[in-house]
Image (cartoon, rainbow, N blue to C red; front, side, top):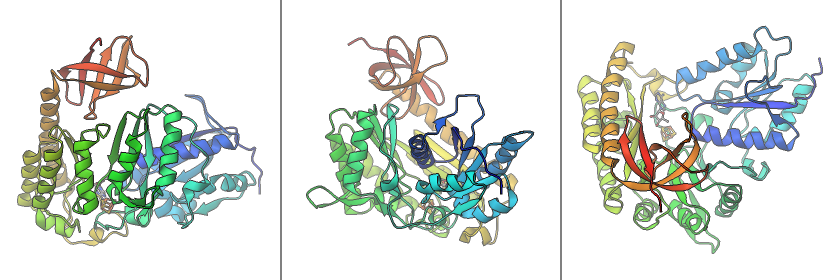
Length: 445
Ligand code: 5AD
Ligand code: SF4
């Protein structure tokens, strides 16, 4: 076996959801702790971590082409680790199909990456797709750096088993991180520069914990505790499940939207389809009607709430009429933003072997029609925002000189020119609406 020089630089490439972005940051912190630094932009890294997504077929296939490009015609190819949900689902296959990969590590085991790296340097390939009950989070180093807008994973895993979805298999059962640990991590993030924290979970509103007084609390309790931190300006959370809103904890969350100023007026609540028959086949445990009722309750608590959703077109057996029901639901809601996908059969999920898989061309047409409705509504939402004055959290420089990019309370991208700095909350008048962003003007206090 060949010894390899210990890596000095790393690059982490995260695909897929925001939780992967969070995991990528945590892996970066861990590698830094072991004396490995981030490779400079445009330069080859000694270690590349591909933090993968398995939610749809395309996302998974990307990995093999990326590995090919990383190793092609390289006298000294990097050490490659495959992390994330593809690693969890297809670890063995990756090991046989991609000899250039020396580490495969699942989403619940990445705190063990440094030990795997030691073995890799000694020429040994290894796989760790355990889902240890012990706390991964406790094994990770303290947070030291933060962008103005930070992610904080509070809940992981899924017990819902929607019939199309791999997440319950790749991320495991629902777990909630302890209240105390989360408050401590949020404090570190704020000290490190975060002004906004987005609480993350596959079913974030399923989060349960005990506050410092030992009282049982749901997500609203956690949000209220974070809102008490003076230097934290904004709180968001994603992704929610309708079933976990129809509970006492859900009612408390709805109420928090009307009462906690720092909780931003934005809700990402996937519905997937507007057809009750399809929702049942998806095992979604809500109907189009119960979903709409929930939204009414949210809107009653916070009338200016911006709504976002996820949609799947072409679930097995979906008829034209059932697809039309999705369009009707979309028209009834008027989403500010949305994510829509063609159904992708995932290995091991019940839907993958259902009869009546839908032809690719039909899915293409449906997706186009759905997106036309969603784009229309997003533009309408943005146009209706023109004339409003709101706070914008400045996240980065824009392309033009003196231009800045930030987010409105409704999660719209806003660009403006003028005096500002990253991390500022500036008062801006929204003056121009584009499809997916807005132009603003600084308002002098
Ligand atoms: N095919 C297409 N889209 C899917 N999603 C999850 N699984 C699949 C699949 N097999 C979508 C859902 C989910 C989002 C994260 O990805 O809309 O809410
Ligand atoms: Fe997947 Fe459904 Fe769980 Fe969301 S709720 S992660 S779509 S199984």
